[in-house]
Image (cartoon, rainbow, N blue to C red; front, top):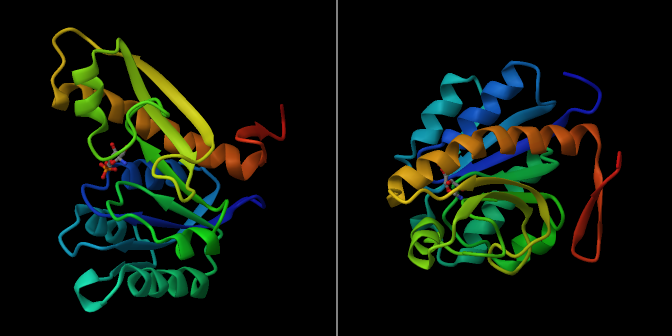
Length: 207
Ligand code: GRF
């Protein structure tokens, strides 16, 4: 682990292909983060198995059914994140809206990846909305998380063409190829270079 290495938690709800890409990049020595904790709100998330197989030391399912409110669920997650000393919280297909108390507690330390070129097509149906609108380029965005859904400052984006024959699945599959490169590369850049936020703009320290 190099000296820039950051302790990271990844939060997932599903397939976990971005988690897998991050773990592979870490294993190859390309991304100086230490994934200490993976949390899923779903017990059947494939991401849990991916994390266990990769040897993540703490892989935890927290069931929302055991909590009366979103805030109580998020407090349980927050305490776990703090207990494990997580500096960054990486959302990778995490489908729950975070409570504002959680966002405030970890302000500037939560990042997300979204399958569109934000600010276009925020929300859960980004790929469908992209196709329905008829734009000719799409891609993915890594951004800081604030109280506005998919609204935080942008750390990085990748662009791909939308093809005439695209379906939701074909477009999402090509976006995911980019996601799997962009997310680990952005984490590596965060660890190696650092950044500051000026207004809404992320400015990398090396630039
Ligand atoms: C990705 O397309 C990401 O942009 C969105 O949810 C999807 C998660 O995919 N937030 P996976 O679970 O990492 O495969």
